[in-house]
Image 1 (cartoon, one colour):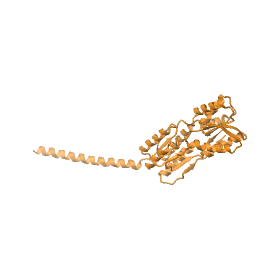
Image 2 (image 1 turned 60 degrees about the horizontal axis):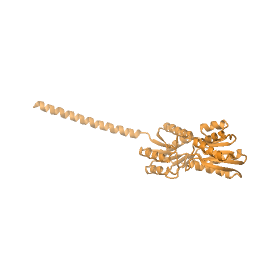
Image 3 (image 1 turned 180 degrees about the vertical axis):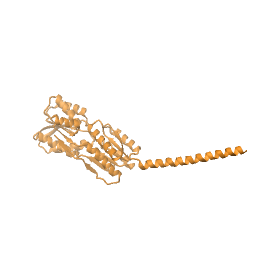
Image 4 (image 1 turned 90 degrees about the vertical axis):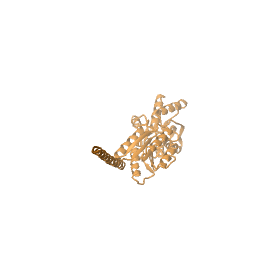
Length: 310
């Protein structure tokens, strides 16, 4: 009988010790979870229109570097110039619980629904380079695209001595950058009596399309003295087409000041490019993000300086 009581007592002691151990473990785990939540870094979601363009690669790299410097995690997604993909990407970032979104729209109108979803989830949104046509955006970081287009137009007029025909290669239809750069450029051209835009076509900010579109234009009309492309990729494509057709004296002006374009200007292939400084854009977008996450009030438009490289 004594042996049975000893056995029962031993079982009871072991059970009590096990319960205490479980309680302590639960407390330890709870403390650990709380510590992680208290010290966890905030996450920025970065949606880029396309990483097939050196301009946006630079913007992404600078944004990621600045986020790391400021102690933020950052998740970058590439829409590959597809508005539907971008909306889906942003919805995914919202579901992942990012604390703030920086968006470079592929299409200024199409992205509005995704921004509205972020608004409904109380996630602040900053746009960079291209603006959005809907949803609530706390800040927009960009160069003055219209002013840049005007700078390009005035430079071409000067180079043509006030007389000549110009081809305009437009960016992605629906993007604010294409609309604004085109508006500024045409404002300058319309102020000139004898310089006219002979034709304008979209090449979707793409080098290969810039080449093809320019080839088609040349086939129907070689009476062209200058080309203004809404970005450097299209300008470089246009230069290839002009060179292949033997039109070596045509003035080519781009926009963005990518490394390839700057090299082309320095080599005398392109006449000029409007410098937007994508590295500064990426940095500023994250700097503004920090202010927003810290509860500070920010300006609705943060301009990035332009420069004509010629």
